[in-house]
Image (cartoon, rainbow, N blue to C red):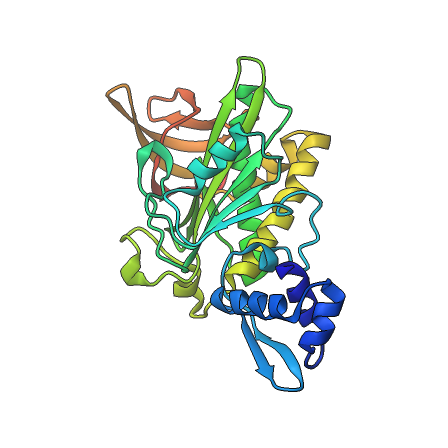
Length: 323
């Protein structure tokens, strides 16, 4: 009933009477009034005038289903949204839902995470109502080794969405970060439940600094608001990401990962940079020369040898050339 009342109020150019709403919905006027009160608690501004009825004058800046799904236009992603005002981690909840058989395209969103996490057990700062904190459930027909490239595809979709919605052009740092002005704008985490030959489901988690203030960010972090100087519509950006991700995901099913990997290379902040990393107690440094078709980072070490790095972090040094 909530969704229908919001829909009626959105379409109306003026006031709608409680009597009309109760008749259209087949419920009592008291039930309509109670639902209106619940909407107000969620942040909707609904004006009420005696003998005229109700009018929607403002919607909340919250990642709730009715707002995300308004004019979304996707076939699958975002059709089922599970929203939480506060949660420990959207990743944990999405993984639980995946275990219970939740369909592909299910999205878990939160206004704040108390234990938001990134790769390698790191914490993700998630101030309330400032960023996008969400996780997607995927059920791709892929092997475990192929699924590692989902993170790269997700980074492309997120970079495209930010550019389309704001005009800003974040670059992608291998393997899972978005950078803006050289600082970390977003992180992406992918976790799998898989067998040897196939993936049962995958969960992609995204943390994006949207309207986060400098005081709320770590020194290496940045937000869209910091760079643009303007408050960004979180819900609108969320819709843009879901559209971009679904388009990329459908292309993956038809044409494989090649289109996404090519776009990743074009948006890369890593290729052409000197990088440093540590592996098995040894420190390495060299030039990132490209991205392999399996998603591995190609690094030409100072010794002249080229290696492929499949996991872990790299530290960007001085950019030498765009390879």
